[in-house]
Length: 111
Image 1 (tube, rainbow, N blue to C red):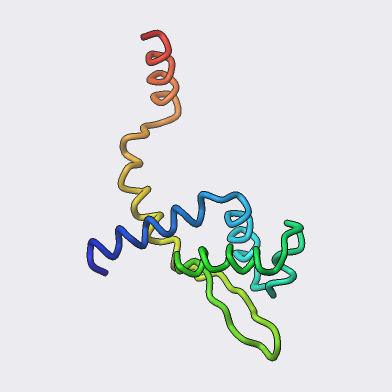
Image 2: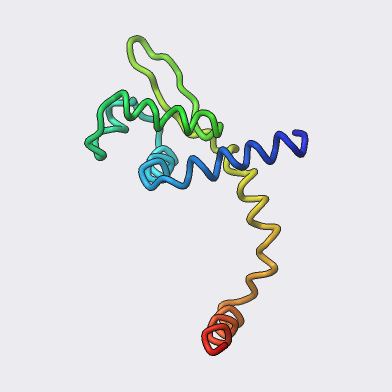
């Protein structure tokens, strides 16, 4: 993956995960694939609205749709979060341990 396309893909991933409903959908799909209507149930949203959420997740390559008869089965693309995970992992060294983080937070409060 080229650096530019990786950066664009990362933007799509973080954009998709910026919404609490979509984060919850990713969480639920991590357990098992689902139909669109079943996936939409807890949110009380219309199917067109649900399809807009799914389009954002698809653009981020976080899910895939598979036609099964008259239904669409939505599944998580487990490898898709790897790009975001690698990006976050690069900055982990800056976080330090919990004690260091607390000390830095407290010192910033007193400044």
